[in-house]
Image (tube, rainbow, N blue to C red; front, side, top):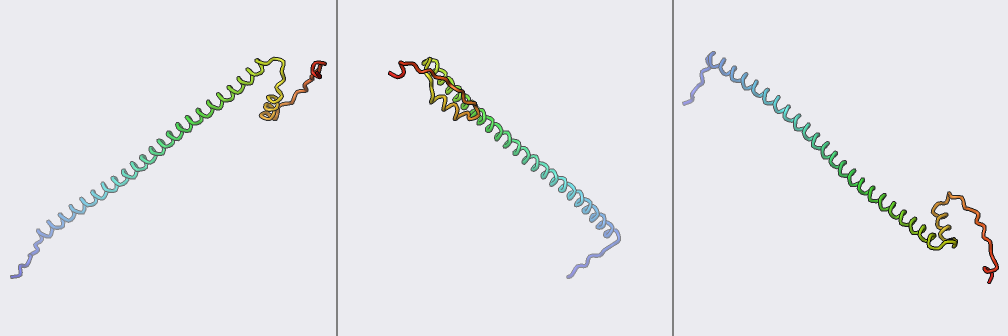
Length: 126
């Protein structure tokens, strides 16, 4: 047998109330979902900003170490070279190191070349 549902005004009112409660609940859930999605986007942005900052810090520290290492080693090399050339000159007083002078003038082309007076003695011709 086919059973018919009888709709009474009380049943209809009850169903309308239930539907309105469900709609209200759906709106609340959608609102919460929107807020949650916004929060997720904010957290993702913060994460990428923090990653970028970390990368920058790592790049900077590596770059700084590299720069310090380069400048330290090049300064050390220059000092060693200067020390060697000073020692050479000290060890052999009175001798003129033309090759050293030429090297200096090729390294520092803006230097003014000095005029060197050399007096030759009879000994030099023997």
